[in-house]
Every structure is written in C-alpha cells, then in structure tokens.
Image (cartoon, rainbow, N blue to C red; front, side, top):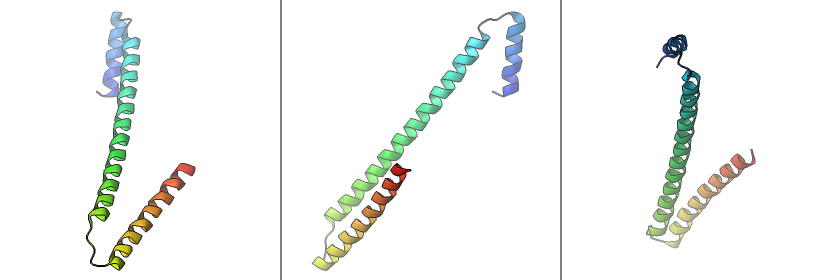
Length: 97
C-alpha cells in the first residue's frame, strides 16, 4: 500500500477516534522488520547449503574419477588442491575483515 494511503487512513482513524492506530502501525512495522530478517536468514542459509552441496559434488567427482595414469591423478588432485587453497584464502580474508 502506498505511503500516502496509509497516511490518509491514519488521519481518518484519528479523526473518528480510533486510539489503536499508532499501536497497529507499530505492530505492522515490527512485523515487516521480522519478515525481512527471516527472509535474509533464509537466503543466507540457502546460500550456505548451496555452497556445501557444490563442495560435496566436487569431492565426489575427484573421488570417483578414473585415471589412466598416476600422473593424471596427481595433476587432477593438484588442481583441486590449488582451487581449495584459493577458496580457503578467500574465506580467511573475509573473516579477517
């Protein structure tokens, strides 16, 4: 609802003597803040779950890979280790900030 509509509704209720208008508006504001906080928390949890799933899929991919030689296995696992190290460094720098 537009802000001006709320304002008009409030003035109409004040003019006719509804004492609960301010309480209702305060409750509505609190409810909106609670809903927004829950939405942010849900989005954060979803992102964490998505990252964890991606990590598990990557680990599963490496663990189930079939290599033609030991050198190929070493190269693949070295590549994975470098990637994980980069992720670690990035996470570490975010925490330190």
